[in-house]
Amino acid sequence: MDRIIFHIDVNSAYLSWSALDELSKGRDTDLREIPSIIGGDIEKRHGVVLAKSIPAKAFGIVTGEPIVNAFRKCPHLVLHPPDHSLYHQRSEQLMDFLSGICPDIEQVSVDECYMDYTSVAARYGKPFPAAVAIKDSIYEKFGYTVNIGISDRKVLAKMASDFKKPNLVHTLYAEEIREKMWPLPVSSLYMCGRSSVETLRKLEIISIGDLAATDPCILASHLKSHGTLLWEYANGIDESEVITEPTDLKGIGNSITLKEDALTKEDACRALLRLAESVAGRLRASHQSAGMVSTEIKYSTFRRVSHQLTLPTPVQSTDIIYAHACHLFDELWDGSPIRLLGIRTSRLMSEGEPVQLSLFDMGNTSTDAASPITPAIPSTKQQKLDQALDSIRKKYGADSIVRGSLLHHKDI
Image (cartoon, rainbow, N blue to C red; front, side, top):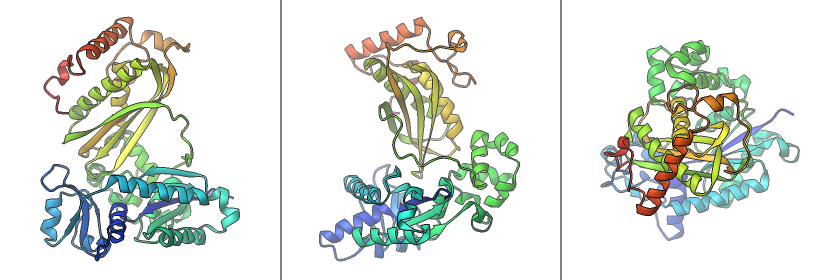
């Protein structure tokens, strides 16, 4: 049979899990039944709405907006602080339960996952009633609701789970996109952020159907590779598999939540440079080189995106990791304000292991992040410089020596 993929998403996870916890402690009112939100301290910068109840949504409150704005819309709003330890526990319980139904689970966030239903279809029957049974059993066992999207492709399953909520199952097979997906505004398309929506609006592309019918070359000229990706998603093109086990669990990475949202590429690359220094330093300290680099962005709306690149030659150089991270950033960023940036390296190998080099590796030493050919190996001079910097920082502290470009930006 053709593959069947479920996307399972907890409805307003943070609020649902906090509500159940409060009820278990004797609270009389269910947070889900009143105008309520989960968020930080109003006085702090991170005072934004992380989750909202359905009654709060009726006041026009949206996830990601400042808490002070939410209270202007609804003065009697109930604010509850987040409990990430609780959320982690609830998430583990859900994933353990789902893994007992089907072993082919790919968790993509604390409250959502993909399930490759294909392997267990013979046991549980047709996808739709099976999904309804899973949804109902989650509510009976844990007390909260989920939406489940069903499709033959991951991106369409994700889109289907975002249809009408809560506590519902929707299908969006490839043959259904014309009827169910194309009439929707482009803002509803997965991975289409506010900046992309504005660019598409200027091109008179309003609906997902408009986007699907647009020449992908035109989209690429305005949105680079992200435009091509959006065109593929609008047409239901997605051959990615449900990844049940990471290909390599070993990795070294770091991320940083910015004190102020990054609004320009210059600000973002400055943060990426600091992260590259940290990650590369840890690689060298552990005598490892990385064969893969990935860059992660979390927007001010808390939407996360990431992209990875397999390297022709394993590296541990700050400049090379930085160059690749910036290249990946260019492919990912849609122009929206950035809350968090991260760099992660994987496919690690000991620095003493033999490496197969190409002719391009021998001649290319450029570290220009904008260069279409990023460097593969650093020069001997660069290697000695990295080692010298590591020695100074080890002896006198991480901030004992700072790049000139970061000198006045140590608050990143």
